[in-house]
Length: 134
Image (tube, rainbow, N blue to C red; front, side, top):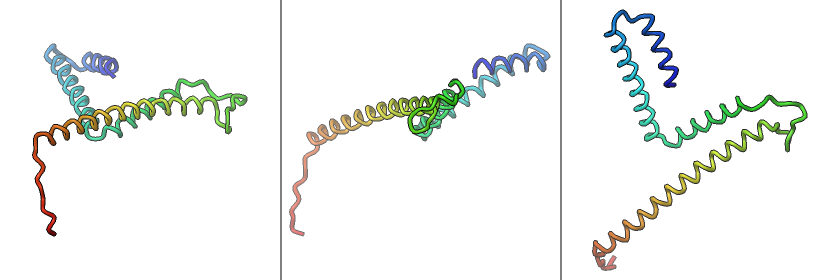
């Protein structure tokens, strides 16, 4: 995207800019819009981390499909699936496994931290003795 932005801004500035001030102003505007785009992406990641991961997986799957050779009639795999579809399914499963592994590690770290925090709280806070008269 950065190279595309550079290319488009060069052509736009060449076509419309009448002075150096116009070129600088257009460049600053493009940098501002690019920064806003990055901030919006970061906000989306914070708000819906798994949704963004899912979108990235779908994009990776689509780009992988584009690089696969076209299906031939004799390239049938198990259960009638083409080799291309099997490769896509395999790549998708590998990507999902990596994401699940990372999520599990993060969850394990959170649980370990919670256990340590609870143990520290138990040492600091005395436990109240309650009468069971009710």
